[in-house]
Length: 213
Image (cartoon, rainbow, N blue to C red; front, side, top):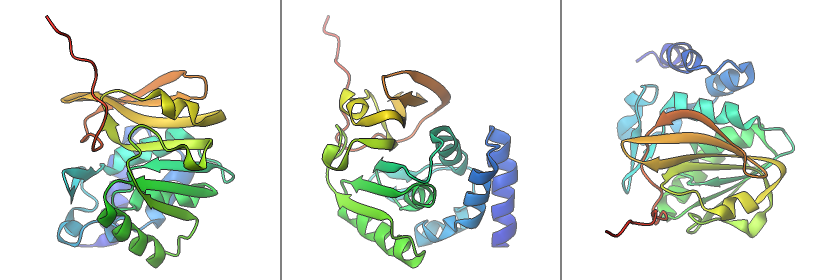
């Protein structure tokens, strides 16, 4: 595989055509070696328009989804960021290159360990990786300028809204399969629908109330 041609095609044919036109985001994705964060046995699929299995029922989002979420967050170099769901560490790396510091939390220790190795190899040090269950919030280092939730949630807990600073932004994927909605939420609770998608739920995600007839 011609890696650089595949990377170019990913950016031009998948990401740019999905309304990601911010040149800073396009340049960031071009310069960050996605294939080095993908599990070794899936590396040939690093630039494909698919989700990539990470284990434990979790997936690496499609490149175009990652790019759209990043663009929506409009991250500034002074931003303190919370990422819920470290996964492979690739999205963590993108956040870290844009913001001041990323606190990334995953419930799975092996994800955190693998991400730490990859981030260190890439010289990315403005990240604190923690293992824990942040599905209902993680205010340990808050409030935050930016919150990125990388797995889906049937219901978005209010605790995340309370953890945003004034002017803060959050992206989340909310709903249940087969159709979920990626949303941008700003401090105060205003919501903007970004696109429809479907990704695995975060482990231990809160379920909506069930109607009893």
